[in-house]
Length: 300
Image 1: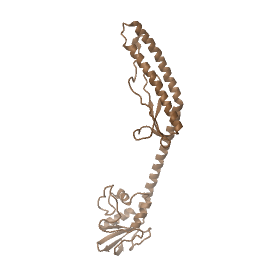
Image 2: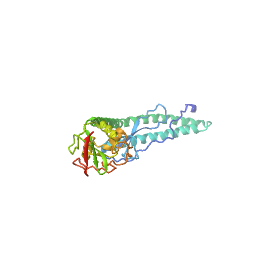
Image 3: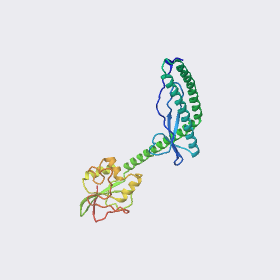
Image 4: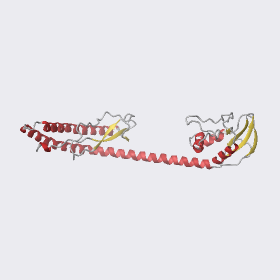
């Protein structure tokens, strides 16, 4: 073999990851697929899986279910593969370096170096093939675990989307139900509007049409009263039907305003939505009534 035909080594000097000690948590580990750097074109270098203890410092990879016995087998397999590949790669690099660096006039030394190179090249190909074959059963096992984990994640994502859509439809239906009513009230603080639900037990002052949420907002806007008082029991029942969302957030998402004043911009999302009116009206829990005397006007 002529030294002019000595091939260039690919990925020379690049380092592969190192397998660390692993401690499964709740029978789970994180696996990360990696292809070892190969030095010769055409030599098979299969993907292997490094196994990590689940922690924020290793966010890459896939979280899979793994028994302690399986974890030990997975870790040992990648350690054995890495040891075989690293050892023969170091030998190949050294042989290539010797064959390429000898002075041309040292004919016998160059010839011996090229013979050594050919022997180590063949050994490199054999060791890489054997290491890949030895790792293959564990690789299939881990790949199956990854596939199952990804299928579970897809099912969970689908279920979350389905539940979110179900909740969204439920909230749309709730917004369209004609259960809301209102009455104009007068007390020492002046005129105000009292908002309640016809289908919630409690005091319902006066007569009022039954409207949906958009109809209620339209009526409140037309009344133009700055003091809007919401029945506490009506709000509590609505939030129960909203499946955990705050009524104020729901109103703001629908109408982009504060439900307590109807016309003003909403407070920041971090602000808490109290049920009392900032101008002085106070809702009571349980009965649907309000503290303080007031006289009821006719329904609107």
